[in-house]
Length: 497
Ligand SMILES: Cc1cc2nc3c(=O)[nH]c(=O)nc-3n(C[C@H](O)[C@H](O)[C@H](O)COP(=O)(O)OP(=O)(O)OC[C@H]3O[C@@H](n4cnc5c(N)ncnc54)[C@H](O)[C@@H]3O)c2cc1C
Image 1 (cartoon, rainbow, N blue to C red):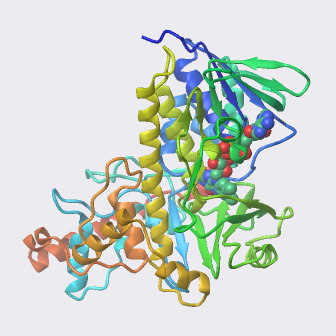
Image 2 (cartoon, helix red, strand yellow; image 1 turned 180 degrees about the vertical axis):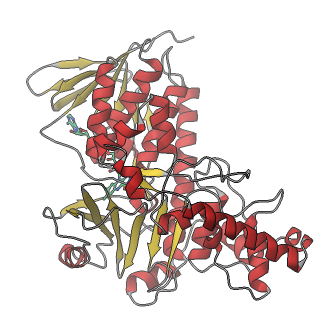
Image 3 (tube, rainbow, N blue to C red; image 1 turned 90 degrees about the vertical axis):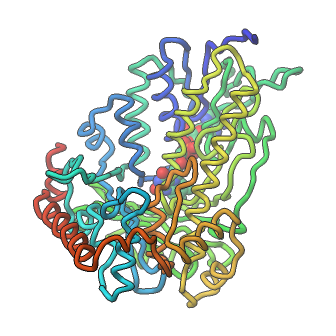
């Protein structure tokens, strides 16, 4: 057994990735190892990223954070889903609402019953049966584990927050638990001559930070994993055409809505994320179709309030690090790859990578089996999310620009093509092993993007016409009644202070 024990972990980078990793590792392994985080005020952070998905609630709970304090400190609001506007067609919108839709039956998901009803001539929307959607559009929120007197799940939620403030909040948390923070810019990375393992970081000014295991959280710089160890990057730009973003905050004009808005434009899409003190805005676009000036113009013309700063432009590469863990370096955050924020998955990928590191922590030294497993899980996870994001671009009926026409005709990964074909013909849909997105998420995006199944599961025929009508009506009544009884999102937020 390799007994090169890991006694000291060095995290390089103090963005969201660095501090989330530091928090989780100090919480889980803080008694067994020493943890140092190096960050450079001179370089700063990417400074964007405000929308999350429900597992973030578990992450905060695992750390033992108080939700009210967290929301107060990060200017956070509640998020119940993402509204996609103009994605399928101009003027049409749908929501990827978190949580389940309707009531699933053994062997047969709810949407089959809904589809049968539609084929028999009823005009109901799938979203009539989503508690999250109804609460979101009516600006309602409260903690609700179950719908009263039923076994049906209540609200599933995530947060919008200022990721910079979240990183600062987690910094205070980590430091209070023993993480040592070093301010400085790395000038040279010292590598062992024979093994190629990273041994130390030499900072401007001469200080040397040695360690046994290094986490590369240097963002797009990828200083350790790429610039030092030369690990390659697999690009996915053939499927995801956007490669630039501009971000700008605007003044809050109304009470924050409990959902993210994603509005498609001629060569990209715009996000609107309501925080308590401002709205986060940005435009993700394809530089092959729009110049920075054109994109800036679209963004600034479509702000919900007065701009509070000049837009910041960020160029990005879509894809994944070929081996996020190599030798004694593990890349987490933007250094490990990037998928555009359409489904708010980047902070989540930090969460899962940090969790994976905690679970596979190589306390007795680097063993290839642990490295391989970490890399395998990372790859599967990212490829599944990639497919889900591609679906939004591929399944569109917009023909008003070159950008959308190209997306419609582009080739897609086999994994996605097969899933879409099965759903379109039969309504059947299966959650792949390790897919972050459950069936309800896929159903909503597929149907919302115009892929309505031709058929439904035969079990949906087990109900008589009257029983089916009763089922749908009673679910709708239950959801509408529940939403009516919920307090406003604004009221929930007012309790934070
Ligand atoms: C346009 C855009 C929108 C996004 N929106 C969302 C969203 O809505 N939801 C979501 O989940 N995610 C979103 N993300 C992703 C999210 O911003 C990132 O995943 C997250 O901020 C993590 O960044 P990071 O910590 O990896 O990198 P960074 O924030 O760039 O941090 C890098 C750190 O490394 C340090 N560093 C770098 N080089 C050195 C050096 N030589 N010496 C010392 N220190 C160094 C820097 O000082 C900094 O502390 C978005 C990303 C982009 C580009």
